[in-house]
Length: 114
Length: 115
Image (cartoon, rainbow over all chains, first blue to last red; front, side, top):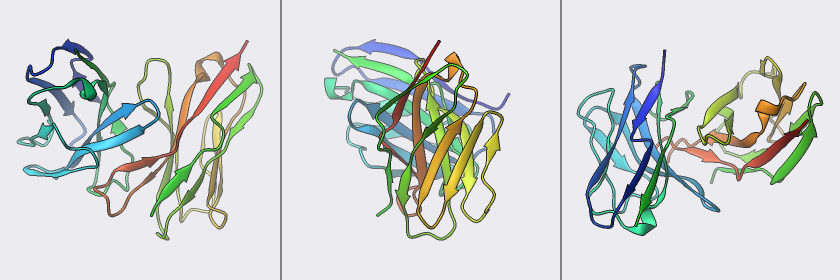
């Protein structure tokens, strides 16, 4: 089954404790992206990747890091989480860079930073 | 700048009836895609339907269809024979072409299907 998976689905952590949210897709997509969704602010792009070893900042990259060492994986790293990073996070992927094709979303990761 | 606007924050419909959700957008591109995504209480983002702007025929997926008016920059979603499982937030989305490929989402319409 074609899908985007994220782990963990739910995470409660404390300020300053490094964490990684994994994202993996099995569709051989070149383009991958991370969004966060917050009430009243909608979905905002954090980082995106056009291909392996090619990543760039989205609209709200502060406090986040990413890497793209393999085509299928695009982890999101929070080096020192803060309460304002409490959010619902989505990973998405699509066939071609530039996302003129459909973006498929993972199930989401709910993060609470205390 | 590309924008997407959904002017109906909430809607409700009786089970088995038809409902139409509105979306307007703005883009300077001549060829583009438009999408409707559904976000049920599980919060997953699920593609409902997509439309390619160069195609004059409106897209249809089972009970879901769109009314795409390119000149008016309007892209409404019609749900026929509404089911309880259609209860969700619905987002209209337009891909950006010079902003890292992100999807530009409307504010969302929360649809409640009542038994």
